[in-house]
Image 1 (cartoon, rainbow, N blue to C red):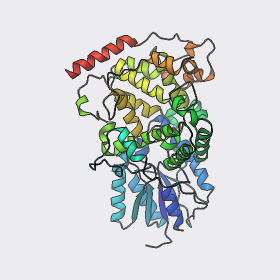
Image 2 (cartoon, rainbow, N blue to C red; image 1 turned 90 degrees about the vertical axis):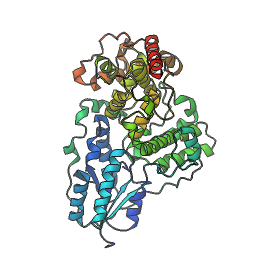
Image 3 (cartoon, rainbow, N blue to C red; image 1 turned 135 degrees about the horizontal axis):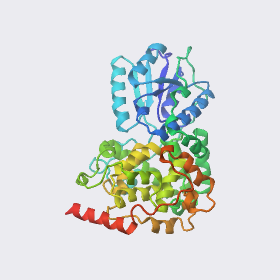
Image 4 (cartoon, rainbow, N blue to C red; image 1 turned 180 degrees about the vertical axis):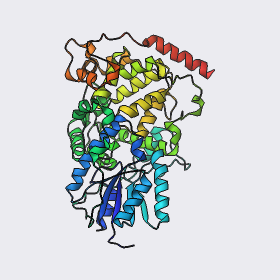
Length: 472
């Protein structure tokens, strides 16, 4: 192998310079490094909001690469022929990439690695998207974990390497290969007017992600234990958006949490546990990839959930169920691109239990609408709420949105923030929902607020009756 030959660095969900193990190693070789992003089969499966957010992240990352003397080459896929063309054009003898563990990536990457190696090229997948690779954390019997608490106990004492610094410079090739223009991909087209609504709420790029982490640790981590459950307060880190695209590494976040814990900051331990929830989701997705398509617990096959995209499901999607906390959470998603975690649990419980609609309907809609979409967390979260998943809440634990509102939104600030019909003078974010919502829905702020789609007492009893009949 010619040590002066370029390395193709295949960029995926690692849009950062700092603590990027593959990029740091490539830079340390002294060889030319050609960063390339492919509009391939992995992009094709993205919903409207995550695809738009990817475009924003790519633009920011291209600017960051320019700052270290490099550039981001954009090519259209599928992955294998696109990479083979680049190898032929550049004389590269190595293709490196950050490892991903979702089913689409694993299938694609195995094919790419085998084909490139067969041609005598160095093909490497390098960790960095997770704290620990899913096969590294094992039970005492050598299997994988199915319950979170023992998983946390296993992970908490494990050493996590310190983050590595960003390269100060990337050696450029003698001649850069041609690439597509990001604007021509129109990654935000499916968002329509919603993109303009969501954009001010997005925190795009590595620099912004690090600033977000620093602000959280400095200002909000002490109250994280309680405030993380309050959608009416700014009590969370918000880092799910940046972690999903790798604009900040989980190792960077972990070590920030560790430092806070060592300083005796209340809330730091809980914050670390929440980061490990993300890790647990990927652990499960790797070992049981069917979690995205089928009930994780096979005994739930045959439960009488509806999968019809009917008028009731449409009202749930529109945030017009007549249950204020459910509607506020759904509308938050259209206005900000994200949804508070307490809201995610409540809207999922309402759909799968009060409405008796299959969790996959909700999971797929979140995949369409969330800018922090993560395939592992989305699947695990929905199956947790439905009762069919690993370490799940029991099906008979049915959230009462009104009781939840009294406890976690006692002054109705969150509900009024996003539901215009609840205020005489609705605020900008409540009105923004009507600009972000699809025009075909025909929603306006002056529409009367609907009566409940499914009454809370009625829906709870119906869910319990269905569960009882199914168990019998």
